[in-house]
Length: 284
Image (cartoon, rainbow, N blue to C red; front, side):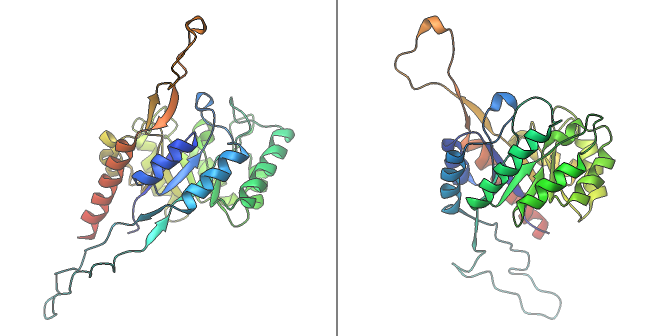
């Protein structure tokens, strides 16, 4: 079994720094949390790439055979210090979404997305997050296939446009056909725990052809139960917490809060620990 993967959605550079330090395997980089995430700026992608390039996470050490032996065999020794799994780089996947609102895009939107994918390749991103639908709620296979082709060697996740499709099983096959490596979904419901039954069906139908990653409403308090119900091995969360403004002066006449969406480091650490514990329990 491969280790469990934890992806953190980050809306600013400070959140990227927190998430990489707390145990994220992968960052989905976005802007505009109020719109559900849109394409980040060149500057944010560039600086986030520098952070993730220099951040590494050590995979959980498998101790399946340490100290155990089959009948007639000598017990194997536990791994010596310093010989465990090599640190894995934290991967960066910017979302490619030109605007908020629905996921039906015109030719100008797709032209913009192609250019943004080119920027991600130029900056050395590990992957991108894309998606697009037709007006009748199907995957726009023609246009999305162009986006996947433009991504070249980068990985491609199909985002939660999937949760707006008319037929999820047809959409699953379409997304596999265009070459995406995973689907981010809440099971066509507002949150992944609510859509867990469909997510399980998708995991089963997908097999080894594509990864199904639950997202939306995923927290430490429901992570273990969600994994048991769905069988998923990758999980997505924003682990978000509102951060109050650090301004010493706030104009009261504006009647605004000016809070920042930030990543809660302890929430990420708890989820990392839970996933590593699950993995090690499988390995025993």
